[in-house]
Image 1 (cartoon, helix red, strand yellow):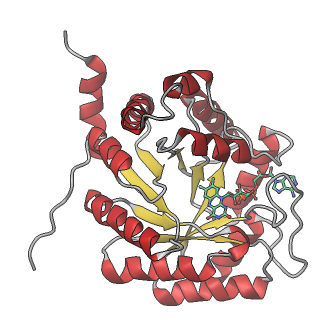
Image 2: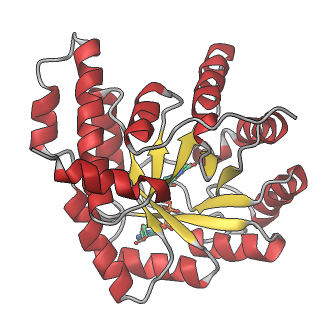
Length: 300
Ligand code: FAD
């Protein structure tokens, strides 16, 4: 019997676009792992690769160094993350200027987590940008970089309601953001329900699903608890009993991610942002399933 889902999927694969998120490495060994991942994923020609910015600007130098190396050594388009936690406008503007000077054309603008940690209330620096929308406006004033922002299908943990969240998204779009990347989620219905509400508010920018292939179930649960993402019971059941069996966990992770992306593609999604955790293998396999193949550079 013909597999209808697979045949529909193959027809759509040509229009698939992906982007990859990395974090700046802390040690030489982590640097090696990151560059192995970049080397493996680069031939898939992502639309861009983003590099996160540590809490309170703690990775400012490392983010910058990583972004600069991507620009110098690859043909990838880097997107540098930037937050406004604990920084004055002048300090943030200096980072924006340094990115512009380095040739960065895409910034992912975020408010950032409260410096006292997730769960505490956020207090803007009295001389700083007050929130992500204010930061987006500041970036647009300082340079002509493309600006992406966050979106939360399951509501940001600090937010009163999904409506308040969407108000903030609208403010970020009005300030000049042209793409939103979502927090990770596992239940696609949540994403589509959120998308309906966003579109109903007249927000037309792409809301790109951020997907987290489950490299490590326990770690993912910790992230989920901090970010307000829910972990469905069926997902926990799939990983249960596998704590000491990394090989099977990896196979299950690939199967779970494949199921999620197939469903998203079937429902019309063509752009995907992958939280790689600086590891290529699962993401590479999912991209392969999405129909992407490494592009070989022509000899000069
Ligand atoms: P916003 O979009 O400004 O706010 C999110 C929601 O929280 C709003 O919609 C609003 O409803 C609510 N809210 C905000 N402030 C308040 C308030 N004072 N009172 C009540 N409600 C409020 N963090 C990093 O440190 N570095 C990164 O590189 C990074 N990259 C990220 C990339 C993506 C794609 C995503 C989804 C998140 C990322 N984060 C990163 C996490 C992010 O910084 C946190 O979620 C932070 O708490 C909110 O920043 P934001 O820009 O998403 O906030």
